[in-house]
Structures are given as C-alpha cells and as structure tokens.
Length: 127
Image 1 (tube, rainbow, N blue to C red):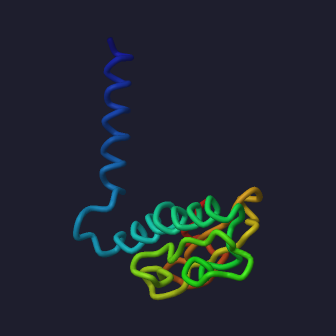
Image 2: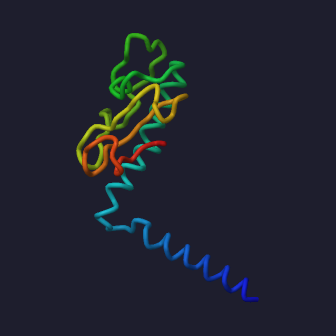
Image 3: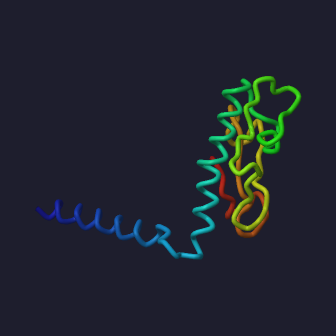
C-alpha cells in the first residue's frame, strides 16, 4: 500500500513539474521558444521533405525552396506559404546545414536562440 502511495505521489509530482514548465497561452517568455521549436520540427522540415520527395535530394539552402535551383528538375515550389523563408522569433534566419553535423544522414536546422549565437546552450535545433 505504501509503495502505491509513493508511486502516485511521484506521478503527481512529475505532472506538476510538467505543468510548471509547459508554455501557457499568453506566456511571453516561453512563447518564442515554442514558436522556434515548431518551425524547426514542423513547417520547415515539411517543406524540406517535400523538396526531397520531388527532387531526390535536399536543397543546398532554404532559398532553394522559393526559387528553383538549376539542378532541381522536378521542382514544385514555392514550398513555403506565404512564399518567403521563415525567420526565427528574434528576426534572424534559421540555420540550415546539409549534410548535417548532428543528423549525418539528413540535415541540421536550428535557431541560434535568444542570444543569437550559434553553438550556445539556448540553440533550438532538430537534434
């Protein structure tokens, strides 16, 4: 019985912790981080995957998702709607590297985060 109570308290503690660190609507401090995470794990990789399906390779840069590169024979862009390369919540370009250093069989995509410096602890990446 004590073990069950301990387990229940541990689960409640974990849930309370998750609630405390999850961005809430109107939470201005964490909202930009969540927006960057969504771009890095959602919209931009979806556009990159569509380009790769159409052409058999990933683009050299994100601009190739807007303007057909000469080697993309089956290009069906623009792959962004609206047709512009997204910027991170701090107004800076996302950093795209293919092949990736972290994802060696794919690409790395990240925001340099609030401090604007790549390679620091606040980077928001797809690895």
